[in-house]
Image (tube, rainbow, N blue to C red):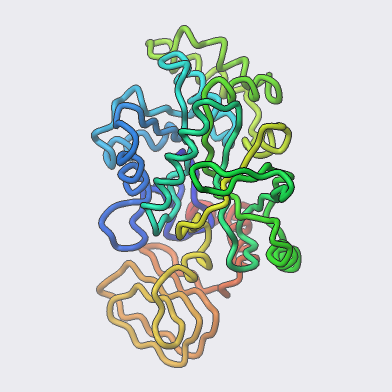
Length: 355
């Protein structure tokens, strides 16, 4: 899935080139390319699909020139993850009704790829012969407010290829700090990675059960997938399709949801603060990505500039973000809530051209 706008990484991530197409860690490849390369180790290239917004078609083709054109699924409108998954599900169903599928965001960081791929392969093996909707839950290490959580049922657990798997009790949206602390202390909550594994039969059945208005529209055009009529029909569906997440639409309601408890150095890198926790910091706890700079009495801050020929001078800040791009200079507390207010303000005044 590669259709998001990555607004929480503004001003580096923009509507015309969001986070998944950027190289945040100086590796020379984008999040999207990292994700493709990761899955290509266990999945044949012809079996990898990318679902993205129609406006990013050329970016996907530029960054993944090896992709088959029919494997790039273009959404004419953003409608959250349930329609995205329904589109891919029924298109895959026409090609291979017995397929087992892993669904993953394209902009996550995975530090231990070996453990990740072993976990995904175990889940794929299990899903092939079981009518279950599987997800990967990350054992939390801190009271994170930027992630959704999955509450497990400790009384209903099993082992799959040596990995602990729990029945899901509840899915929970991003909590406030105090509730996140309660989740961490209880030992019953995992971070929701947004990575799902299932077979086509099971996800199609559950989509039709809980989201019939969405599922049946994509199901009805199965004869026209991989034909010239597909694009026109998809546009018609998305015009009237409601936006809803797969978590809220299906996973919170189904009785066949299970979660693998795992840990492989995961982060959705969803905010600047999340990037701060992941990145390598200097002796004052600053995360820096700048050229020439004079930094004095600055602690616990993020300082980023994409202009190598500009001297960056920062003095006397603590727990701040200083983000400099070609057309925006952001100076803001590192607090996620305050930063979110900045993004909201952009949409309601004359500065929305900078989104």
